Length: 243
Image 1: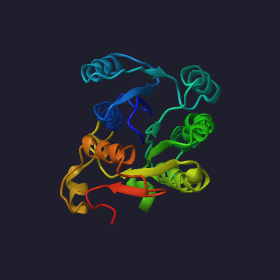
Image 2: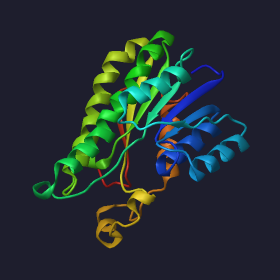
Image 3: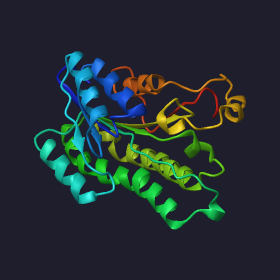
Image 4: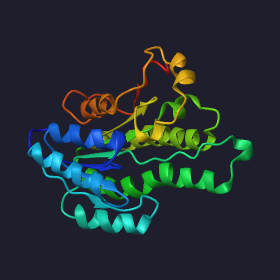
């Protein structure tokens, strides 16, 4: 990307991995638009931290499952100029063995993790194509690469995102839009705080959980000047959990 004023939309950008991504892109010189379902103390603190870095921070509120509500917010925010970078980080888990999984556990995860990608990213693609430039980075998961018992819904949604990234990369590459995915393993966030470390750590060659900033660093690379010949790829940040 040429050196100019840039903006980045981080969907699910106020907590956990998304928060780390928002801060890293602000450090990289982007004005940032993190999203959340409802702003509060976390969003306010993030805004203050971004502004301390000398960048603008505009928190957008919407539920990624609400297609019409999302489009209304995005149309009003990016009416004149599509984002230079879009990071899709929204995701939930409702773990259960498939034999016991109820329809809500299935639908809630697919509607948020996979349908949410369509609802939030698709409205922006036309504007990015018109600019002949842009980056789309999707946060998937090691579970989408290998599958995980107790996560049929989550694994399906994350594997679906990988397929979407690869197909979209073929559609947009000739117009200068780079589309890639980052697949975190077990990262130290609120979402993983109750996981049984003693059972999981032996599966990870580096013998530790990851830090959100390690994921943010890869997103920074994919949104920066050193990744201009990377397209349709999935970069694992999993300590060797997936090799």
